[in-house]
Length: 381
Length: 106
Image: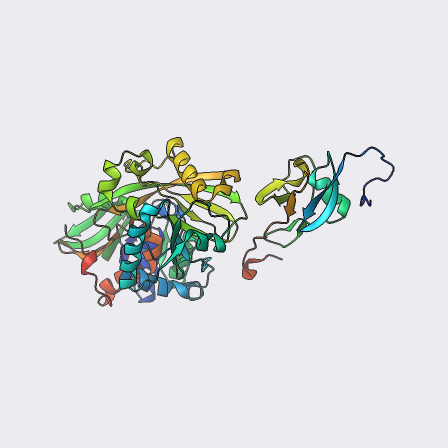
């Protein structure tokens, strides 16, 4: 039987990062990916680190630091651009929420400035005249998530990792409460460790081991426009993001169909000039189809903040299933019940942002010990 | 008034008015498309390609190729060949998006 040190299940941005940092630590790594690399949530994604909307400030700061020279380290352009990030208000009533949030972020070492509507339009005249203000995090940036995943995977491969795409994991075999092997559609591989980096699909594999992994798929629909050269601000989010991303109570009890679908606008314009416009956050199980209702509300919401976008042609729509964890934190953890199993999932909207630090921490869990406190991200069963 | 490269012998043009091309005031005549004005002015390079930095201009002239995209009164991606010049309209060349130098081909 073939054998390896670590099997990584999942070839998204998290699995690819995990594979790289393990290979860098001289481990033998095999990645199993059911489809192509970056083909699920990583591939339906406007990749960015707004920083100011994070749920895991300590992790994201470390990840942002790692991203700075990641392209160089991996020998591959990940299209990192220092755009800053902006949260835009829809109405004056949101100001106290935004100010409180900015203060909270500052407490965690993330600098956020509050701007008036006039200040915003001085930076970017294409922001709607009735946007009363917003906040800016100058340290925010965007990356190309697919390029990040491929860069990690390519660098891991150079260090000896094996990438098995179109290979579905059937079973994780456990003997005497210890990981023994992984059976995939291509056979069985003996292994000392298994990293479950299967995003929204992690709970399905977990349940085969009688583990309850508290992650649910949350759909995010996204619109992609033609290259549309307007604006100076290239990374902006609706201040409602603070509500729709994590306040499930507010989402469930709202009478507004937009809020009920978890929709708040996120707009990014990567270097080629197209606009990625998202997004919704609903819970349709494993259905990743696009819906006219959701796309219409997303488009309207984007035009509310940037009216000129109503002239842009849509060239594609997509949807990805984010691994949503109700407590807002990812799970980066070993598992008491199964020695050798490590979970890396539940990143929700921050998978791309947290990929570097997650890969590093998982590698440290396996080869030494974590260099950051990770109690918050522990699997509780 | 100088009609640029317009055919000189045509007597009956529409009414003359002014538009701006990248801020420069030029004459246009009722019924002309923005592409017509650009061609008449000889000011024809509208953008450069993102991968190879090659010049592009009015190509098909009938709304099919989308190679003559310009920004008109602040709205990008208008086909110059399908958009009539109107008094006072502001036509600007579009911001060029280019790949990183490392990715340029050729």
